[in-house]
Length: 266
Image 1: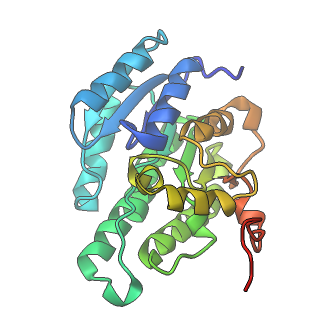
Image 2: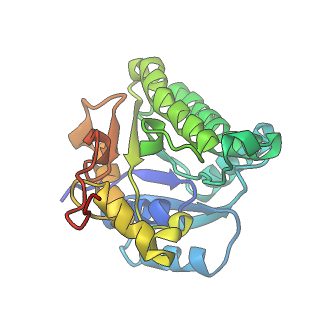
């Protein structure tokens, strides 16, 4: 098992879904962690308890990263450092999936998506990187992308564009920060079952459709992303820079799904 003992991590958007799976996996691997969410509540208390049960220091901070970037990034950074000095791992997980068809897109939805999915991780990474460079810290960064950064959907043009930007940020941050011994990589999940994708459980037909479009036939929970995140920030991945790890059951490699056996052409 990979260990992260001696490391300290901030995982944004970590009270549920993929972020929660990652922060709990970090704690299980021995890292002290900062859990982040929009507000405190039952979800944050549960994640705190689970992390502390692993025998590590765990703290919670609140902050809405969809707000004005020029203020919320510094607010989250300051709170995180005050709660747990010496953070050397940053996971930019907070994001949104709100979207509308292209012909119905409005500026408010567009800007909210881009602030949370692009601007906040861009400048939060910059904020930590400045501190790490100044103090000669070998930082590690993960940005959470999506299969939508490579494969488009007609009703998710804004989300797709934001996740495409995340994939390029992984590469450009790598080129900029690797000379300072700061590693930047990304995770791009396929469809996983989280609160943001509740339609999977609400509509069995949709779930079946997505299983047919995934080579391994699975729509798993967010825990499938956690082990990849642990690996990417560990010393085992010391020569992995600027890589987007797709955790998608093979969906991104399948040009055209097989015809269901039950389909009978007319």
